[in-house]
Image 1 (tube, one colour):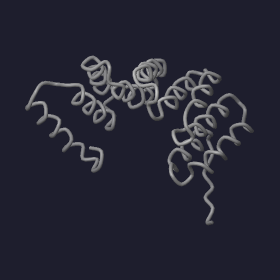
Image 2: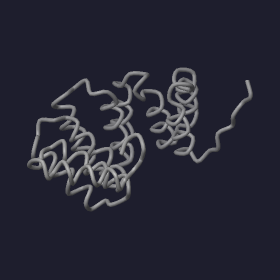
Image 3: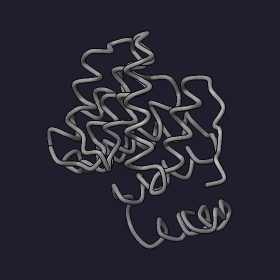
Length: 178
């Protein structure tokens, strides 16, 4: 699933794993990720909730449910709750503050979102999140400054997120040849 994007193969392996033993949280989480990857949102939601029920203290299942399912289906309040629970279990979860900030921003809670983005490390989305939240709040010059910092810090290591910020702002990326 993760390396080959072989959805049929992933489905076969999930069925095989299930035939070898009972459903567990890892199985449900991976099945939820697979369903989300191919746009089967109702199934993904059900499996993600099942994964949390099977292991409510696994921060990863909360983060996957929040980011991989709730954010992508527009359930921003649900995503916020998933991220808060995941961070309650594992306060130093990489990009956890970023994801929480994103859920808050998409609900129109710009200042709390900025506070969460500021808690994040530069490698895990501090500048990118801040650029989007400032833009959403109508503060383009602050967004521009955060985007410039993001490009300086993560331009070569996380270009997809830089592109995502430009897309969020409705702007095309201008590539330089230097």
